[in-house]
Amino acid sequence: MINSGTKVIALIGNPIKHSLSPMIQNYFISEYSRDAVYLSFEIKKENIREAFNGAKTLGIFGLNVTMPYKEEMFGLIDNPDRVSSIIKSVNTVKFDHKKNVSEGFNTDVEGFLISLDKKKFKWKGSQCLVIGAGGAARSTIYGILQKNIKRIFVYNRTTEKINYIIKDLKSAGSEKIRALNSINDLSDEIKNIDLIVNCTPVGMDIGSNKDMLPVPESWNLRGKFIFDMVYRPVETRFLKKAREEGAMALSGIDLLINQAALSFEIWFGILPQTDAIKEKVLDSI
Ligand code: NAP
Image 1 (cartoon, rainbow, N blue to C red):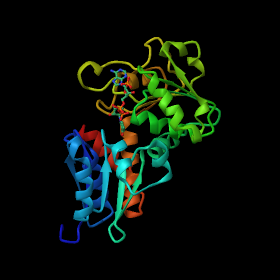
Image 2 (tube, helix red, strand yellow):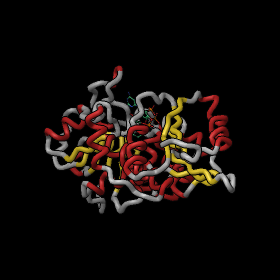
Image 3 (cartoon, rainbow, N blue to C red):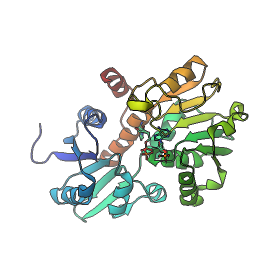
Image 4 (spheres, protein in one colour):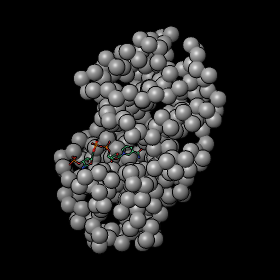
C-alpha cells in the first residue's frame, strides 16, 4: 500500500511513453516486497537540470535516466562512479538526502557483459565488431575492453565519432580499437569475427530503419554471437538472419532487463531474478 513513507523512483527521458522500465522495475518492487513505486516522466531538454534539482528537493529515492539524457546527467551528478566517469554517461542515480549528495552509475556496461556471460560467450582472444558510435556503442565498447579480447572493429556511418571514443577510452585500452571507414572493409576478415553488436537503430520497427540489416546480406553469421541492441521488434531481421545461419542471437531485451536488475541492486541491495520478467516483457510486446 502506498503511504507517506513509500520511496519514489523516477525514470526520466524523452520520449518515454513506450518505455518498458516501469513494468520491469515495478515487478521487481512487488516481487521483493519493497515499499516503493517507479514512475516515468517525459522531460524537455531545457528542463533537465530543473527536473534533477526537483528530484533532490522532493526527496526522490533514485532515478533511471534514458535517451537522450545519460550524458547530460553525468554533468549534474555529485559523485559519478568509476565506470560512469570513464564513459561520461549515467543511467542510474541514488540520492543520499541526509548528505545532500547524488551518486551516479552506469549499469548498461555490466548489463551488456552479463547478457553475454549468461550465454557463455568466450571472451579470451576474441575479435568483436561494434556497429555505431553513440551512447550505447560507447558503453558496449568500454565493456568489451574490460575483457581479455584481441581486437574490436568499430564501424559508424560518421567515422569521426569513433575517434572521440578512442580518445575517451584511452585509459581503458582503446589501442585495441580499429576504426573502419566502410563495413565492407571487414568482408575478408568476417570469418574471424566472434561477436557482432548492433548499436544503431537499424532494424527498428520505425520509419526507414524497419527491416534493414546493419551488416551486408552476404556475410555468413554461422557460429558467431550476434547482439542486437534493438528490441522493437524482438526478432529483428538481423537476429532472424543470425538464427537461420546458426549464430547465437541475443536481443536488446536481454540488456534492457539485465541493466534494470543492476539498477534495482544499487537502490535496494538485492540483485533480482530476471527469467520471469523476461517472459512477461516478451508477452507484452
Ligand atoms: P545514439 O547515441 O543516438 O546513437 C545512434 C547511433 O546509431 C549512432 O552511431 C548513429 O550514427 C547510428 N545510426 C542512427 N541511425 C542510423 C542509420 N539509419 N544508419 C546507420 N547508423 C545509424 O543512440 P544510442 O543510445 O546509442 O542507441 C542506439 C540504439 O540502441 C537505439 O536503437 C536504442 O534504442 C538501442 N538501445 C537499446 C538499449 C537496450 O536496453 N536494449 C539500451 C540503449 C540503446 P551517426 O553517429 O552517424 O549518427
